[in-house]
Length: 294
Ligand code: GRG
Image (cartoon, rainbow, N blue to C red; front, side, top):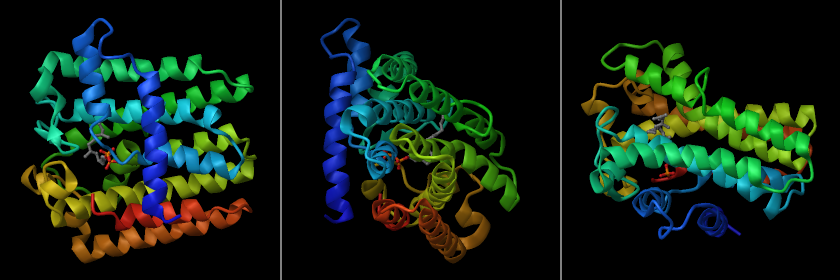
């Protein structure tokens, strides 16, 4: 199976579980549940849940063990996109090829839809039946940490907002993106490994993979922001330049950023060598991350 087919198959599985795990649109308050589902089912790549599934499957974990945790990451990712698009943040009107949540449902409902997705993610994690209670608590802690403030999603967003219009060093740029984008991607790999029962050495190698792949994702994202169209991306292209944001392309140039994305991808692939299991799927995903067109 090639990587495109793999993503299609796993994304369909993620969608099936998300549909099961989210409140139905008819349930009160209907408008909020519609808003949550509007953004979740707007056609994202499902990269984070797929990383959890791919990693967990390497260690023999099954659908019922992996999907609740994988879907909780997608709920958190979608909440971050809804909030990031708000007028108080990036003020964008296009996401996943559709009008942004606040444009359709209003600002108040978009804030609440994001809040509700974050809350539902942790409820999902707590509710699912796991044979290993210790690992379940560990996964909840890992996700709480990655979605939190210290070298994590919200903290990265704060640094990003504070850095607008500033000239950053390469180190500062990396610090922002390791937190804002990398933490959740790396977490996706780690929780797949934890659910699958990886040992400490395997977890260390996979953390290395996740961090490299996470950073390469952001460098590729910056390249796409400059080289792809809004239609291809499903979000507004050229936004970073318009907002005078420091990006990998403004810092290293298009060629420099391209080389950096490829180098990080190679390093991620190399890290999988230390697992001692067939990790070809993670290698394929590392390549996909830097070669994608959306
Ligand atoms: C508001 C708490 C809060 C956090 C916002 C992740 C984030 C922090 C903002 C998202 C905006 C953004 C452009 C982030 C950089 C890279 C990124 C995460 C892009 C979107 O991820 P994809 O390409 O999206 O995986 P899809 O739609 O495919 O799921």
